[in-house]
Amino acid sequence: MLNTVHYDGPTAVPLLIAHGLFGSARNWGVIAKRLSATRPVIAVDMRNHGSSPWHDSQSYEDMAADLAEVIDRPSDVLGHSMGGKAAMVLALQAPEKVSRLIVADIAPVTYAHTQLGPIEAMRRVDLSRIENRAEAKAQLGDLEPGVPDFLLQSLDMKERRWRLNLDVLAAEMDKIIGFPDVSGRFEGPTLFLSGAASDYVQSEARPAIKDLFPKAKFAKIPGAGHWLHAQKPREFEAAVAAFFAQT
Image (spheres, helix red, strand yellow):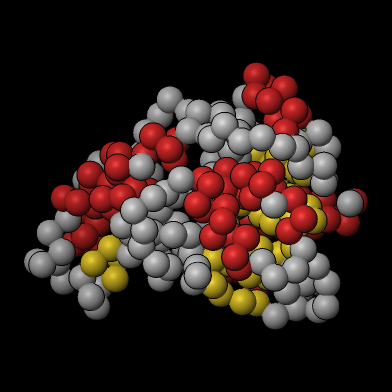
């Protein structure tokens, strides 16, 4: 069973939040707490992340099954990036568990990029010799702005270990950047919410999206990139609230 963080809220359809690659439930703490003003919210650590169990697979079918195990009644589901793909597979394979779906800055397609760079950077850190996060950050080397601080949220200084199964994430990277050949359609309300400055959801992907999610709607947050919920949290929360109010 995945590790979960619960935020109590008024009686309503619960909201399940699935984070992206290298993330954790704690990354969503502020947004989850604010969204819990109108509903119960559950944020999860995905497999091989945070405090959840480690497994040999990082397939989307397995991640979707993990999410299904957490849901005990029909829920709204919000997933970002890798978590968004897992949420899509969940909605396609177990539509009875998903009331409404929000997919944050990802499409049901295979991407050409890889995320092995951050994994290699984390592997370079000599955990036996660092005394603080600043020293670890220096050893991470040259990464995109904001990435080192994000990765360091998964560093357990007390135990001197990454709360990420780096070996499996590296071995399963082709599955992570891909999307499985799954059948079915999700007929519920669906929002593909993207950062206007991100190129993760191209217009060319819309036919594939509409084929799987015929009620899909699309929206963009100005000035936001792939990490739209971190870069524009207030605008992100407003877009999520507006979608739920309209549907």
